[in-house]
Length: 135
Image (tube, rainbow, N blue to C red; front, side, top):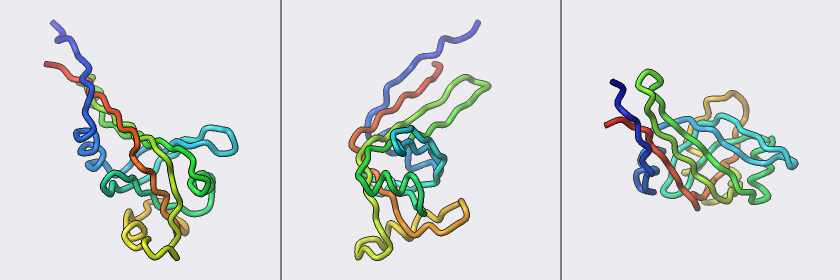
């Protein structure tokens, strides 16, 4: 007999704990009115998500203060369980010339090749999460 799965809504602190435990997520933003979703490595700094970036769509979106979302998850396909967390909030651009940029530009170390001289910082204004589990 299959044990029935249930969905648990996660609180903010649990969501932030899970978010800090994974190095890669999916960053969503609008570029010229069109939605874009790209994989990024990131770090969590308090209530802010930090992503290194070079020139491109996410940098332009951050420069104009666009709202972005970062989604992370962990799944066990054989058990049909897992969790997901989504962070939403306004983004800002931090340049390497900014006097407060040192910590943000020190990490995360970009996985993707190319110059990544900027930090895109997304404030976690809204944090939501769910866990699909079995008793």
